[in-house]
Each structure stands twice: as C-alpha cells, then as structure tokens.
Image (tube, rainbow, N blue to C red; front, side):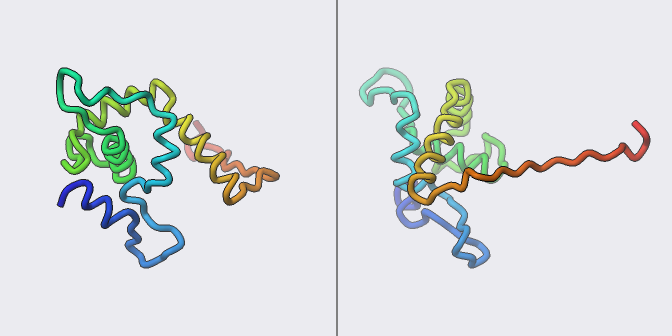
Length: 133
C-alpha cells in the first residue's frame, strides 16, 4: 500500500472504539493546510541533488515518531527516510516551526470551538525527600 493510498483510507484510528478521542495516524487535510503556512519554502522540484521528499510526508513521519516513540531509523518507509525526517525535525525545531504551528492551531481552535481562557491550572507537587535529601 502506498503512502497516498494509506492516507486516503486511514486518516484517523481509534483502537478502543471510543469516537470522542481518535488517534491521528496521518495529518488531516484541514490541519495540514494550517501547518504548511508556518513551514519554510520547499525546494523546487527540478533542482539538482537527491530526490525531494514532500514536506507533508516528512511531517507525517515526524508526527509518527513523536506519537509512537520509535527510533528515527525504524520509521516505516511510507513516511520516507528516517534520516530525512530527523534532519527536517532538527531544522524546523531551530526555526521554531512547531511553536509557531502550536500557536496558530490554538488560534484556529479558539476561533472555531472557543477556549475558556478565564481559568488556568498548574500541576506541581512539593514533598520532602524520603531520605532527607
């Protein structure tokens, strides 16, 4: 099964039968349309060098590694090379792409669904060390 076929057939999966919180396997088109706006420009198709791996395929691969915790080398071939995905992850991390995408997506979600910004929660714990350290 090719990447495009799988993308069309399986966009969201839920192992437990719970339809309220599905597991995203491949970035949905609507989400991708928002994310690609914060990515740097892609290399033109007719350039010299190695074949170009589309950003969407790379982003899906990065998302797969982050979701599953697998090694970059173990990334399934349908997402392209693990080394390409890792290199792009490092580049995009330095450019704050993920932070920009997070902020953009929060704004989109707030516009569509509304975020209740009137309260905040913090989770922390302060206890004495069991050995007196």
